[in-house]
Amino acid sequence: MADDGAIPRLDRGIDQATTALCAAQRTDGSWRGHTEMGVTTTIQDIFQRHYLGVLDADDLGRSANYVRNRQRSDGGWAKSWDGDAELSPSIESYMLMRLAGDQPDDAHMLQAAAVIRDLGGRGRAQSFPTKLWLAVLGQISWNDLHPIPIEILLFPERSMLGLNAFAAWIRQLIVVGSLMSRHRPVAPVDFRTTELVAEDAARAQGLDAFDALDPLLHLARLRPSPFLKPRAEARAERWLLRHQDDAGYWCGGFSFAPIGLRLLGYPLEHPVVRVALEAIDALAVRSGDERFVQPLLSDVGDTLLATRALGCAGLGPDEPPMHAARRFLLAAECRHAGDWKNDRPTLEAGAWAFEVGNYWFPDCDDTAWAVESLTLASGPDDGAAAAAIARGVAWLVGMQCRSGGWGAFSADNTSTLPAALFNRSGPVTDPPTPDVTAHVVEALVPQLGPEAASIRRARDWLLGCQEPEGSWPSGWYVNHVHGTSSVIAALVRAGMSPSHASIERALQWLRAGQNRDGGWGESFRSYTDRTLGAADSTPTQTAWAVLGQVVVDPAHDSVRRGVEYLLRTQRPDGRWREDRFTAAALAPLYDIRYTLQSELIYPLHALAAYRSTQQGHGGPRPGPS
Image (cartoon, rainbow, N blue to C red; front, side, top):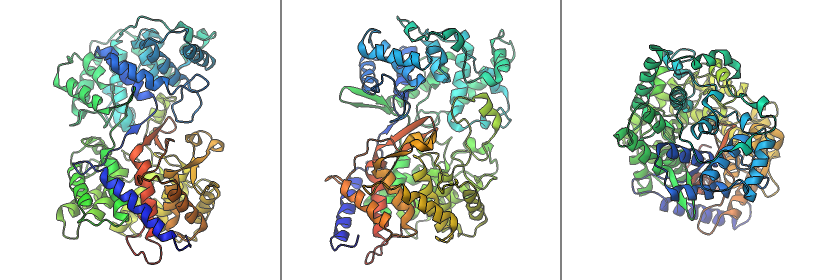
């Protein structure tokens, strides 16, 4: 940005975004945007309410509008924002609209049914939740499912098939799914969906995620054991009661657990069930004639990222927004020994989750961001913050995997047996990922120094998983733009020379992907097919690319053009608009949009980091990516 008006324009853009972000802070010191994950959570919420007998007609109508308005032009639905029509979301969407009163001979329903049949029909659905709902709603027989045998809950938690061998996000599904498989609940609807059966239904029926262990799983169809099944059911009850957090959730977000509790005999009026339903109510967002259900609330995650961005923009710890954020973040620390204790039994608690109250499942990403954010939001004499930072650093070091990387929620959660059991159900373990590892490295280097043993091991792991063309993938944000930018920044801050061959290859890959408008964009499709990764520019992905490069060469033309793209696309209110979903959930299954992160936080952070490198602006050093 060499012209005379560039710096004032940059200052103005940062000031406008800073003002907008501060205005969005909540009274408790937190920030929370909306979290949107396609149609899946909304549909499953409606089906659960139908089964429980608490379905409100207005909620059903608004949810149907939301789903109906997201039907693709070809008649189907996808799990991701720009994906192709897929069988499971199309079946679930069709079922919801039938429940809302849409008729099979309506034009949009005829088109949807044709797509479903073309994709193989109802019998080829491979998603276990989709099959559960088809059985609950009386559309298929429970005999058509290979169940989750409830006896699986009798394995010791730390064994090869114990719950701890599975990723944190799938454990409650296994517990509730096994209860549903045992009790076979049905809440029939007054219609049939035979129009969704393809001509080859007989051949398709029964193909699902459990073919690999079919003989073992069929044991669950034997007559109930008078000894094992009741014991397993009691263990399911203990797990559900123990893992409900203070906010009423399991793993911090939407859950089928209310159905599991009802199957265990808990009435709707019971405090555990009532609080759970109230928690799910809090996930619902109503806008106009639509209603969608968020998969989780992003209050801690958004606050951590907002605090980092504002600190990089120049707000000091004495500024009211930073002081309020610090108070909120200190209260959000998880001092509880969660499920991670099974992986690291001697490790002391001191971590952060993405959501308030989710003390059973804190994660390494948010804990790393908490270490950075509290450092920015605290003064040198702040003993409470210093102690919390020290606990966070110790927890992160203790959660490092043997390979040298970090997973999200667990350490060394890489068993191959769970993946074989759920071989078509998406990621069911939590191995290390480059993006999480990079974020932890960035947090630990200022605390431990670049030559600490944990940093050296992480550097080696990151170099070993670089892809041939120079990029790194990301497990939690879309995708290689984020992963590559994060790793570049982490390696440089960890003491690696910018001229190192791996960093040069990464920069070459990143710069080659810059669009003609100066921004970067990447499709969620890149998780399954790299040739489909090119996409229009987005503010979020452009911000990541700038953050990854500004620590290496802030004067490079690609950085300047990226900054100009962000300034050009900023709206008068200081925000940015982004329709594309640029975060990931259980990649490659779902994409997510965190509205506050995409509309304000990441673009502001990138502009502020760039400004701190410019002559005459000696403010905070560039913030982490």
